[in-house]
Image (cartoon, rainbow, N blue to C red; front, side, top):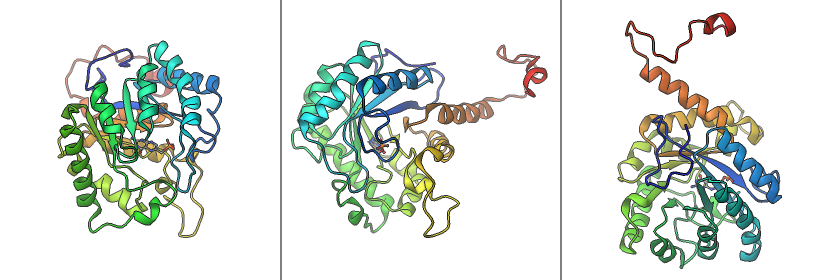
Length: 304
Ligand code: PMM
């Protein structure tokens, strides 16, 4: 049950699950899928595939934010994202543009994107907050402490949950003061951005504190390195990104249980199945009447 084409905000799925944002990185060097969707035609096809798999929003980005990454020029970022945004929006897909640049956000909105997703929460570009306020577009403000080249040196906190919440609340105040409607501000703790593994786990454990800030919350743990370290000994290489989808599904289920508005993932089917299974458990009843969707022969055909 997709929310495709819906213009109301906050976007919600009609099956009660969190909004599923599928990722399309139009980059040669993202950590999770670097290069796979760099050609516009491949990126567009992948965006449509994510929607067919049940994604509600497709997040199109043209800048890799992996630790140490160099930034592309504005022109190069525009060249990467605009054709993809335009084609997907033309096909009725709800598109968010993943950018730290006001120029890119503005042009992407004109090309049909409806949401701006800024991993810097408006800190990287002085023009971003005003652009978002003028446009009226919903804005994802992620927790951020600096560009990828040196962000891991900024992973220093007195208390990571308290500090991240305070910094996110400050971004929300700045946005509201500039004229952005409070319910159009989505907050995101920024997993993996200026965070060590234990910071990420603590933020997941205490996600309720981020939710208490009173804004919709987006969780983007998908394929991040801290998930790749599960089950690996110290010093051992983390498992490759494509082998982190089961852990991504688990963290997404956790976020959904606590009330996150959305989850940002690379592999939609695994997370959506995990979310659906948990919802089915939550909604199972002892009533004598079977729901209409149950099929008596299920057990006979596939072990039910
Ligand atoms: N992570 C990445 C990129 N964009 N946006 C939001 N809102 N939250 C995130 O956690 C986030 C993001 C990095 O992952 P990718 O390079 O695989 O897209």
